[in-house]
Amino acid sequence: MGRVSEAFEEAGVTPTKVGACLAVHEALGISILLGSWALCYKLLGHNKAQKVFNQLARHKSYNSGKKWVSQKTKYFPSSVDPEKLVVSGALSTVARKLCSPVLVPGKILLSVTLIRRFSS
Image (cartoon, rainbow, N blue to C red; front, side):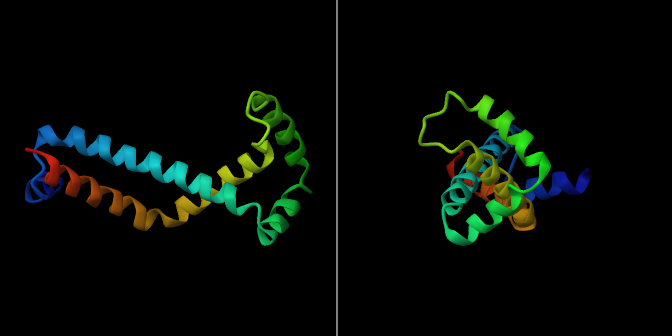
C-alpha cells in the first residue's frame, strides 16, 4: 500500500482529492459505456454486422432472450429495436473488455490529470 500512496503523492493527489478522482473516473467509465453502446447500436445497421446478427438469431437461447427483452422494453419508443439494443450492448461489453488494458490506465491518468488541473 505504501507504493500506491507514494504514487498518489508524486502525482499531487492528496487524500482529500481521491474522492474527486474516483468520481471523475466513474464519470469517464459511464461515458465510455454509453458511447460504445451507442456506436455499436449504430454500426449494427450495416451489412457486415447484420450477418453476425443473423447468425446469433439461430441459437436456441436467443429466442427466450428475445421474449424477455421485448417484455422489458415494451415502453421504449418504437424507433428503438429491442433486439438490436441487447446485441449492441453485448458487443460494446466485449469491445470495452478487449480495450481495458488501455482504457483503465487511461481513465486513471485522465482522472488524476483533471483533478490536478482544476483543483485549487
